[in-house]
Image (tube, rainbow, N blue to C red; front, top):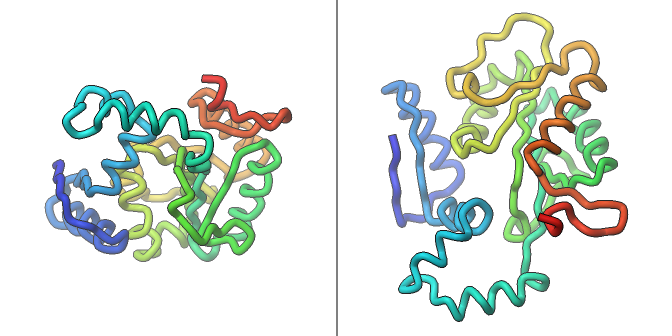
Length: 209
């Protein structure tokens, strides 16, 4: 079910609505507020703006392109973890940083960014264990991120987990026995998807595309 609104929706209200519709009707709610539409137009479908000059004047778009170097937001990978998985999240954030990816996470003191206006999320990584996936607050916080279709799940437990329905349709990587093995598969996924990162010469992979 898709719902488009011009209302300003807080993250908490958005996640609560999605969880309520899923639990009550077993429907996957696609909720499009102004902020989500803006991000989609900037990051996923910028060409759409050129098709609607009455809304996006071409002169303005040309000016925006010319000044992109001074106004562009940095592209980040977001890590989301339950409290009990913070140690692994910190390890993963540091490994991704070494590989050249910009990482932010509200769960990790060294990777918190105060102004989210500076962030353009290119990939969300959800870290799940039995404890985390049974935490209602954690599930509520990841609801909209999963619906955005830009998330992957890292499974931290060797035992059988009954994954919530909302998580069944996203890519999943196993980190149950060997973290390095799972990390290599995750890196391959990020590279194949084209998630931008900084090269040694300081240029972003996004600048080459």
